[in-house]
Length: 330
Image (cartoon, rainbow, N blue to C red; front, top):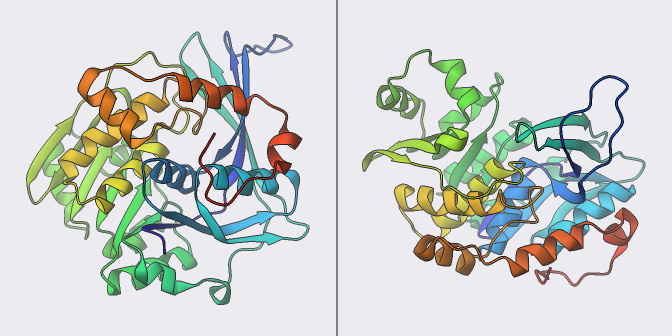
């Protein structure tokens, strides 16, 4: 059984690095390109698996080449996809991610998925009951039911609140660890009284509240008190997936019994290492690599560089490559 189970329909990212974003009628060559799996929960689970946790995903994909890629890429990272259902005639989500070196920013152009959602009859809720952590991002009826079942069975519910939408507030009562973005913070609060605002956040139901602040790190509050974790300074190549990886790393820390303060430091290190490579998954480190970085400040590059080169291959090759279940060799 999985330590961490997540619910999401995974997607695919085509990432390219440009000198700057092109203007109207401007043409330019890509400096780098990469096909990688995407999705907040999916990438978080990939990170958790690389860090040593047993992770599983429930969701749907289309029977297109993007769907085959999504499944293959999750298997590459050791994620159990027995709960991912393939919808005949469905369309898997796709994003074009433009990273420009001029601003170190990113622009994302998305094509939504068109697959019928999971049915309750298709879900093995025993997996939820027996997990240690339930990882959610987008809240829908299935996510709410999974959160309710998890809460009733003592499973820690971790919510990745990247953007505000009204249904978030339906799930707070079940959430144990809320990790939200600056966008969500700004929706609820207009002042800089961080500790007071974190106390307000805990009043909604969570036991741990964390707000991520990008290059400024994160702030948090739990029974042990207020804490602040600064971001690690690394040569940033791409911030795509940095938050997703942070959440997955944090979930893996919960499985290991670390405190929120310890988990925030470890997860910030994982996210920082990820940012030294293109995309959300090429730069995910192992637990050993992360611990080495925390001790020495050095990033062990060889394995990450090999994965970057691996993702530069053609889409068909990556989508249809035969991979053993649970393989995390690449």
